[in-house]
Length: 250
Length: 93
Image (cartoon, rainbow over all chains, first blue to last red; front, side, top):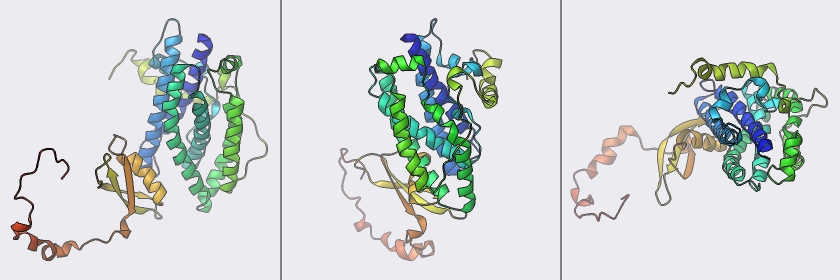
């Protein structure tokens, strides 16, 4: 159980950290000052979620390791996030739509996890879940505005949908460890989350006048540590300092 | 950016206090202004409530008329509420 939970919290942490790192790349590049601040605010929230999950994961390992060890001293094949969270930030429409997909997923994930039989996991989910509600209000508002405004904005968000849609099924993938945790009431049931996600996202895409792509390559692999080439570059940048100067503090 | 309007932002620091003007920001519409105000002006626990108002909806006095409007109050000291001591317990007066 301990080993399953340690693995599972790593998946949660890696997902939040890679999302947070991609959003942090907007710092100084936002479409305007106010949005620049907002994007990096959400980034900090997500890195905070990652920190809480890494602390849990690290404490359960033998010997115990720190959150920083897990974030900065693991290579790409040891990361367990779904591929969608490591994709490059793209343009603002792409970032916005990707964020919306993840926010809806996180909303139902943390809502269910808040009733976990594992007390610490439930407590983290309550805190993270509250912040996610705000993230979703933002990404939903932006999706609507981009979809219903100029031709260029609409074309860009439709392109983002075409590029991202088949990365979303991987969000709901589970492995044997996760299934044991779900059976024990520790982890949420991902099939239920997938239903809730679809029931919210698909009508919203229609409301925005966006067309779901019909067929494409369906992403998979993150849960087994098989990633896109983007993750390696992201980690190279993110991990450079602690690897070049081990134990460095500032 | 040409579509963006200027909004003035008012924050209530805690229950019981008035909303106070804290600054302004640009946004496409009132809802986005509110969201951005939350991120720009309240992320260090500055408030519990936000108002945003489109700047051009505010009717303002003319700075050029400052003297004719406000100077007459200066020499009527009997109108100034300064002739009684205020109890220490009264905050935010």
